Length: 345
Length: 140
Image (tube, rainbow over all chains, first blue to last red):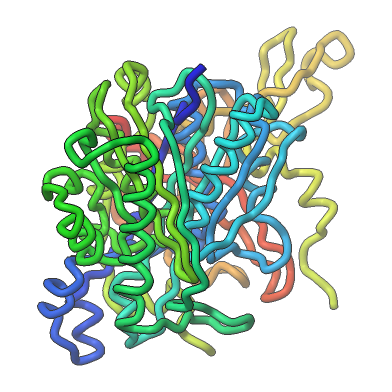
């Protein structure tokens, strides 16, 4: 029997800060960032939102679409690089809040921006092996960007959850990964903000991994660009996934539905998963979606999904990604600094 | 190191705090939140069972907090409301969204999962349910 996504759901906090608002404070040229990064604004969590609360909201939406008893879920894995505790899992809180059972395999994952898709692979493997009937994978983050750093224009908050199982709304046709030791972005213990390799994050890091994983999966499944209706690539900004698509000869309309970064920034572990949710929101039965994540350090997970008839009945059972993108309120830099705890008193 | 909140006490209340688990009397259908283990009307003749509230309801009263207790200063000004739950009992809770100008009695609300309280920098983070104004537009 086919295995794949049974339910999905995104969550994006309501607040936004524009590229102009950040540039105004640091005396930079907003237009350069807006055009260079292809990002207009980024989402900002309220002071009572974090990876756990985002995970719960996205998880609720995924469960609404899955329409299953939450106690049937046998595994919960949450990928994030902003787990609220250093020691104590985010997953236990999320599982209790969602009413999952206690015969539950659970762990928090971390692999920069791709821990959420690693969680999907684990659930897929356990279901395929017959160990569990359903698994939930969540990618969520409240990303940190050092004030004044280029990352500050994009580091956002949001996440997505997927219930994987049998009788799916999107069949997982295959997955593969490409992993190397490439240090393009890191954060040491007790450091508030990450460091990055600036231009080094591009060619040897993002592009090498995303393009290789994507090509490897297409080769594994004997697919070419024409066989795939939509592509979702990890979105550190708008420029990188657009350039990756150009390199592979993918028409821009095939990445457009999932290119949520322009309106919400990069929510790290939630980035490509939210893009996948936005694409599932508009995809038709029989259409194929290829998603490739990227996590610094570095690795990419690539997935091919075939949308089934089930999407029709389940799509409207929970809020769509567009609802969260539209439902927004812009704030100024002072409020942003307060909310993100950047003021030390 | 002393903490302001009791770890075991919060653990005991987790179901109610996270998922609005209350109780219901199967004899007279009265619902209780926080949960009661005995129906005050039916007493030993009634049977009380667990029920989970949807969290959806209507604001029947509210107040705006401008001078907050310790730990809540960052939310000021914020609204705290008494909400009549659709299943039939009242509950008090914080309204998120910082839209105090638009608050009104009779507004529909729905639950959201948020941080409730942080016990300093080293203690537990307590999570629970707050409410947001429900404009009925989320599944459109």
